[in-house]
Image: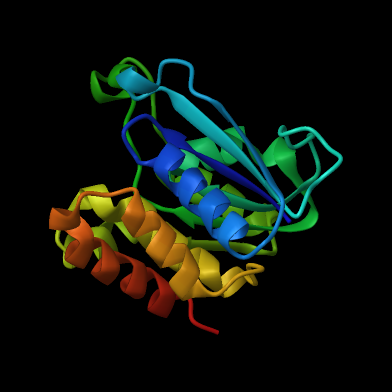
Length: 192
């Protein structure tokens, strides 16, 4: 299973990919990962490739091959659609991270158009206000755990509790309860 995680710097994409990779290793699956982080510290694009069960291939997911696009930001979902295979599924957080030029009024950020495009052109697309769920859990910084919780409804090759346990190992104990809540809110938001 190939999962591409996309968003912007500060959203916890690298932590999410490491949690997925650790869960795969715990479940006895081979895994390959790679990140492209660019200007991530300045809210630039961050992409993480997670290849579960892959032994003989490299860590980068080829264009048109990802089974799942997990996007923590809507514009980044559009920017990375080229990676999704035909029939692949996308899980998109609807909360935008407005780029500086758009915030200053120099360029638009057409959120409604972006979301409409995703819904109209990706039959397997699920959009949700994951940021609202993260705030409900206690902090916007738990957005990545909300999205991982949602992702467990997409047929991962390991149990949800393994993914949560591996994610919590990467976080300080002081934020475990809040991140557990975020994961559970995400899981329940898309429960099949």
